[in-house]
Image (cartoon, rainbow, N blue to C red; front, side, top):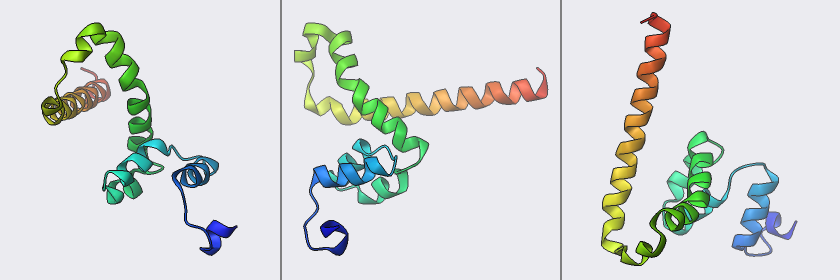
Length: 109
């Protein structure tokens, strides 16, 4: 109640509890807000893209570790932006391919 009345500054733990109690996927939204992307955090919270981001961020470290193994030490920070663009293009292609298959099914091809 002190949070709601503005008598206590909210912490990350508090924010996670509030978002979790509302049933919203919150880790991605909190990370976006911390990184300065509050607008996307608000826009994506409660949307499929927010749930995707939560699952993606949860799976990514383990998947990278399993896939790269000892080569994980070869990763360079400067590759991060290019890799994020590559992942975004891969997702866009996947969505386009999925939509095209749906249209083909509807048209009976």
